[in-house]
Length: 226
Image 1: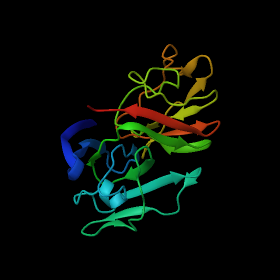
Image 2 (image 1 turned 90 degrees about the horizontal axis):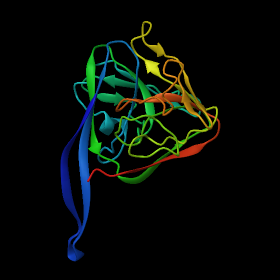
Image 3 (image 1 turned 30 degrees about the vertical axis):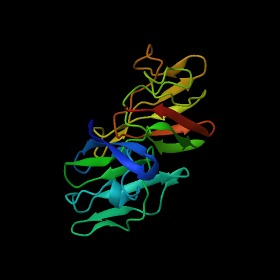
């Protein structure tokens, strides 16, 4: 996966008193493998909003592609289907930055997210129990915790007992979960395969993961491109 800045545009907000807003637009490419589930997350603000038809707007998306949203501890009853020549149906799903989703395409395809890079202080709520989430800003760094530097980790609000479940699309016939990684208070993330790395796993750009959280917390980031 790769991310790039397309433009940094000074857009006049109020010409009469010379007030300007500076927006940075970027894109992220997220390849998926034929008939295998991929766990993705939007990390950009689409225009004019984050409806699925704006977030995943390519007209070359394979006919029959399916998208599933995990919310309130279970999969939502609404399944989005991409119909060639029409678009997403029912097309009612919102995919805000940090929100994870599962997607399956009938052929190899690269989804391209295009939108404004979230900047300043931004946050996403991580509920108690199971959730499917991703970083709200386009960075691929270790999860870390609230005490680790924001320039080297994603400063996830980890608490004792929180468990990270990575998805590996290469396992099984459609993909499967890999070994879980648990957060231990006073120690950090414990990964049996990498016991000396306490800052946790590094989710890829535009990817999401399942998290079992002991209590609700806000994942707050301060991120600036310029």
